[in-house]
Length: 201
Image 1 (cartoon, rainbow, N blue to C red):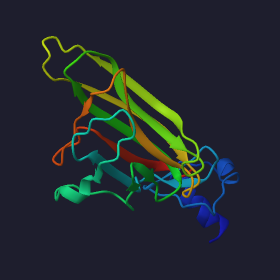
Image 2: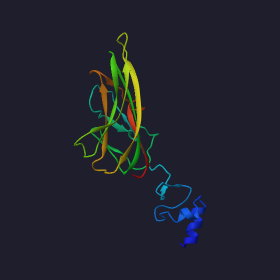
Image 3: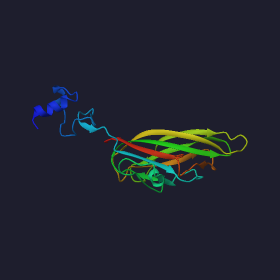
Image 4: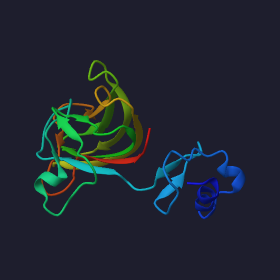
């Protein structure tokens, strides 16, 4: 295209002639489905990936949570956007690099008091060689008469996935004492993770 034609396309999206000369016109195209990034390149405004996972059965553990299922596996009325996140032994692998919003939720209970009970989201940069905490959130349980009492804890964070082979995440239970029951279900996300890719890394 000529510079005049390119410029008219950009001006129609609110970019001035002066700003046009600073743009990388080879990165994306202007239009209703795109936005102009801070580095003066165009990027898609559409969500290209969204995926939901949940615990399928109740577990009693204070370590890794591993009984996961994609929401699309058991629920015919649910779907994902883009390529699926994959999971093996509680470790989640991403299908594409980018900035992801991760929402975590935990429902857990006990028949005895727990001063703290919560979820821990961890990531590895070397394919499980070492794990670090990305986010953790806690509640507590006061059981009273010994009946099973549940607490709901949720959290959200963003993570920059730059290496698909090495950069992975997992979710753990943290509790004051053993005996906590983590609630699972095949019909709703009582304990689970939701992944949404917000944009490129």
